[in-house]
Length: 404
Image 1 (cartoon, one colour):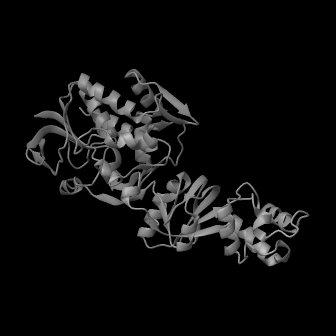
Image 2 (cartoon, rainbow, N blue to C red; image 1 turned 135 degrees about the vertical axis):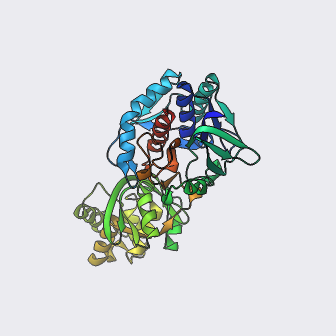
Image 3 (tube, one colour; image 1 turned 90 degrees about the vertical axis):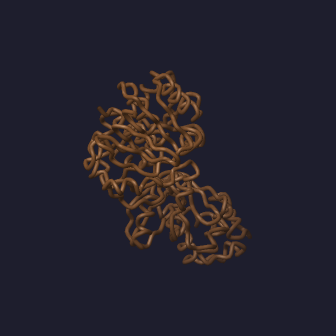
């Protein structure tokens, strides 16, 4: 019988195991994958952006983001950096994003695994825990062919995102049987699929722009940066940042749209002037509408915008009407994309929603059952892009691992 069983060998589970074992507990870490830390290897395109030097009020999201901020104050980004440096891993900061100095996600996993070996943590892989039951003052965790007993259990089994890395929600029913409720889970940090199939003609186009998310006709969230048009969706960091809000709105059957400002560093009047100058300028001559505006934005996007404004790209620039020019300039500043739905969990980087944090103490212990703890993505906390989700996993894992 162990002092602590940890279910899930991702970032939260590995951190919990190290901290708990340092506190003198006999720890068993169980994971359904053949390899521990599997999802960590894929983060940051294999570079593992594990935290950020900048934190504000929108870094953590959920029904009660303050739950995460209270935890963060106990184990913040600088403490996490120090933790890894004490284990021997240097870090590198790029525009506030913090990576291992090697810029290899494997460094994070390997240094944690080395610490677990030093602390004699028992690890069990290729084992899926299907149930958790009370047994006396402790717990009985049922695996495929055998059961495991412990005085305490930390559930760090992840969310529903990226199931290829082993997070499939198979432990959720066991958590419900123990009395815990879940805030509805939706994909977050995910692409957004558009309704208009004609937009597929822009697949491969990259665009630096401003964008606003409209829900039920109201502008609610703004971002800027590079977005990418794909065959049936838009993606890129700005899109991912707003995706959790779009996911919940779609679930609630509210109309969702993304409004793109193609030339976000210019005002509406300035955009009108730019287009007018090129179309009616001294160099326009016998050029077509497309030719006069070439170089202003991406060529394929320009062709699409001209057609959307009712202008044949081959139309002589001299024949463009003021009303058409006005329409085109407005489209440049407010290109509306109606959203059908978010991408599914297989394409999402993280899960929004999870175990209701109102049922969890600030120690990450269940308010319903003593000795039962939760950490990481399984809780109703998700982060923005930029290392915040890994920071949450490590923070909550550290605090859960401090159990007595």
